[in-house]
Image 1 (tube, rainbow, N blue to C red):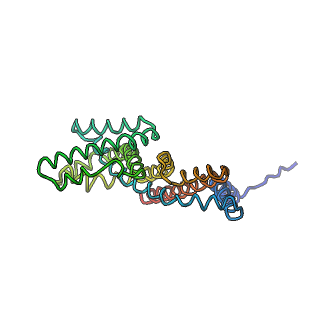
Image 2 (cartoon, helix red, strand yellow):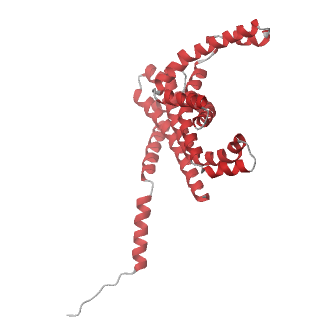
Image 3 (cartoon, one colour):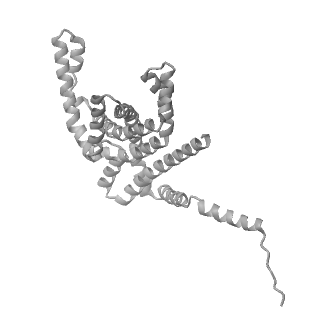
Length: 288
């Protein structure tokens, strides 16, 4: 009996494998999140209870965005200074930066928020008052009056929350900046110094631009994390969306509607920001 052989078209096989890969690589998780968001937004538009919860809770959105943006901007400054301190050859500066990083990273964020807002800020106000009295005693009355006029009641809870988040995240960003700076080969610094640049100029014009470019995705991920952790400032009665949702749920007893809307609002913000970070990573890889 003659054997019959079935030939396989390699082009068809390659197309089939390519289709399977495309199906496998599709972001199914994103589709699932998109469907959840669509369902909740439909419920908000069609259901009076969900709509009332959304209208009430969204009033805290500006506070959430404001707290996150200001805190993160200050945290970047703290993190950059501490990161530079972590790689400094000066023993005092290096140990102060290391103490700051290890101290902050070793305490839960919620505890730090309570401590900085309710203990640290009042102590800082007392130091400012003492400094003002010292200036007044030494003939600098104008500035002395400015510092002595500051009272604990003048520092609002949202300002304390911003300070607490900035100090806390500054320690985490310090390690990111340290790793980014150390990822630059030593030859870059040596080349800059050989051109006559000082250490500060070499850092500013050669090392830091490359290091910051390398750590941009990590900085973006930490910003997404801060958006979520900003909900912790609600323990200070700051009227962000978490605190407003708690107030709504406590006054109406509609816990399901309040916390579903709150969760989807956070989910929408963090997913959009995460996608932007992924886009940034792809653009950096393409550029490389």
